[in-house]
Image (cartoon, rainbow, N blue to C red; front, side, top):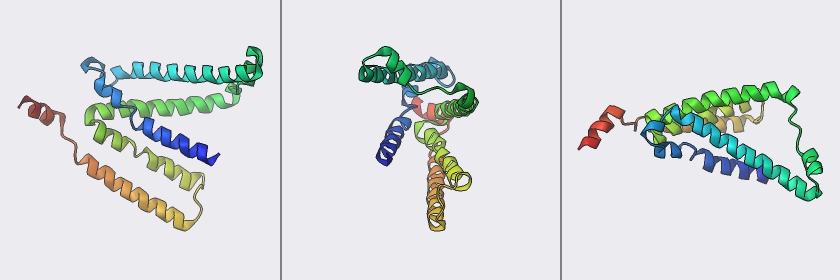
Length: 171
């Protein structure tokens, strides 16, 4: 189970770190928020395909579409719905901010700063969920977080303002 979790994290890192690359190829009229609708359509399409594949595997295993459908996980909309909707709302605000950041600051600086989200997730894990209990491990986490913040600050110094970049492209 832990291996699957680590594999999922590696895949998320590879794909998550590349998620804004298509923004650079979208063309001048599809930058920033204009990119958002197509991004949402892409997310919905992939989710639909994954759900269909999940159903197909169950249908093949049970040799019945109705039993395959019955094997799908319940959506638990009445209990999970409000929390999932809130999580989706929070994610969408972060994603809109990410698109704006990458559009304005560029992939290297903007998306690197956006990835400071791992610090926020880590703080939730340390203080609220108490996932790291050993004081020595907590100290190591904060040391690593400090190094991460230093990297973010150094990367942010590399940003070339858009006006200067446009000026340099003229030459």
